[in-house]
Length: 527
Image (cartoon, rainbow, N blue to C red):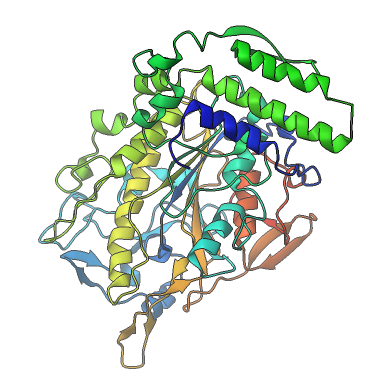
């Protein structure tokens, strides 16, 4: 969604009212949000890795005997150590229940994690140990995305149904809509996309407050959401607002207040004259228009720019820099390795913006693409995935560590990570390595429909790897509670990953609808 003006924002609101209301699915019942326990988080962050990554090189669910069948022998890539043997894999912590604990290749020197020692060691992925993230992190493996086409698989990851178009709203929009009534007074930007390198999640059929607003930077927001005369001098005298009781489309008080301009008050009052004069569908349409305009008015009444400017994004990592970053990872959210001296740039602003949005409590859902595309299609694809995949995942660990060090707004004793569900995902995986009869490895580098999703934060049962892969990279059956309440054992699908996220965030299965069937994967939600 391009940067835009206030006038365009108002056009979005009016256009959103033309979308079909999915009453059968319960998707418009944003007021039915219910908090199951105090552990249920109230925010969602999706960290998206473009192009299809190889999660088994980061968190390894296979049995030790299977590792040499699908993981190449240790070697190097641009003077960075890559690949591993079973003896190099360590548990982050003792097992939590019957599930395999989080396991990763210990590429670092345990006596000195920052050491490189002639490129024999790498501290990438050590962040998960440094920040002790195992207590609030689990991984679901072997998810069938139902496609190996980039665009279709992106949609599948976002909403649970593969296809050329969205057949269900993205998980971000479902949560933004579900929690809207509870946080409408304090979160004027329910769903924000900081960056979307392979697409923007769509809130198909939901009200305007569940649609994504692109916020790549504070500077980009100034023409739209700044109250400073220096930023928008042309609005002086036209944006004076008066606070009063908010009325619904039928003129009844909602119980909230709303600051509106003269023009907005007139427009909001017009719906009352048309309600009840035609069919129920027309009334629903008018309610949608009225609700959309109310949402936009609430956003425009908040000086979002000033709030974000006063909020520190990357903070704890700068003031208390982890020692393992000292000689190797030169920036807060980047990494270097080997003689090639690769230096990832541009990730810091994305992570900083996402943290500002979360810490300021301006939004409910945030989507961020991590800046590096794994769609390699070449002979070094596996090496690239192993080295750079672990580099980006270490950046994820630092992001989670910053959240863990930040108090949750309005929730004493809780951290920002406690009050947030973070999903780390890609659109699909990439083809697996295969050991051949002569001991060498076949290393194809194509699209692969099976992938993994990391679940981190509040209400997540920590230190578990649920599901796994065959040595050919296919998913294996897991325990699932179907939408009917019946239990089954089958390979998880993208719809099940989305459902599990919604359940962790406190939604019941009757609060949403995903075409084609869906279930909750057992073992990822605290219970």
